[in-house]
Length: 253
Image 1 (cartoon, rainbow, N blue to C red):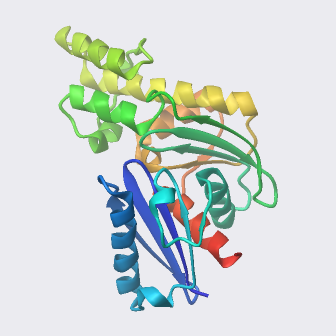
Image 2: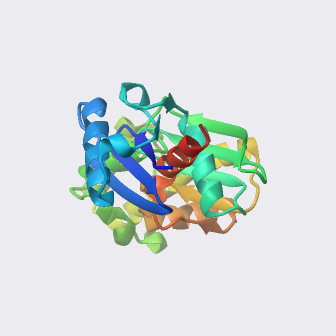
Image 3: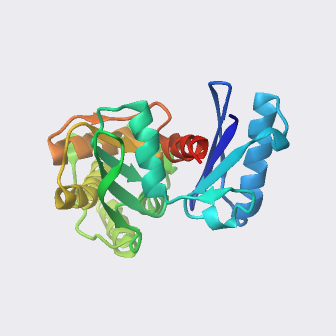
């Protein structure tokens, strides 16, 4: 069966097409039209697989813009799709931390990869990729540079949890000639503390997976490791676990 999983996030749209036991993946900025982005992803993936769009037998959409994907056979929450995708990649995982552009999630799953409990922050930018995006702009850096630019030995604690106030705090720290590397380490600590509070709320169980775009940031990985006191597994394609789960669930429709 040829199936397609589309994870239309607030910042990036991810797609995975499964055809004859091969996985094809692609990612695009979500932009202003989730519907068009979903269609563009579908075209790009079918081109990769050298098939026609009409050859796709089942499509599942997930994420922020899933309702906009009119070609989907079913819309499924990102909680369930991330659980399914991570369980497929690593059956040992029991706790999933997913930090995306506009929200962060902690998901507890059982031996069958089913969701047992979850906590979600989608009301505040603190603890999300948006927090890092805004604060990196205040430092005149691209968000992709933060991981390699931090200096934990000079860590400066960021006291403001609100993104707007944190941005002002960073500008003030820079004006005092505080080393940028220490400020960045403080940003990573701030994100990890917000997320780890959700982890402790639902209870941490080994093994812990870290997914989402922010999982590519080695500084946040380090800070989470320190906060949780637990090893963390990061999938090679950490941004695609939701799309993978959607494609796998499409096989089960």
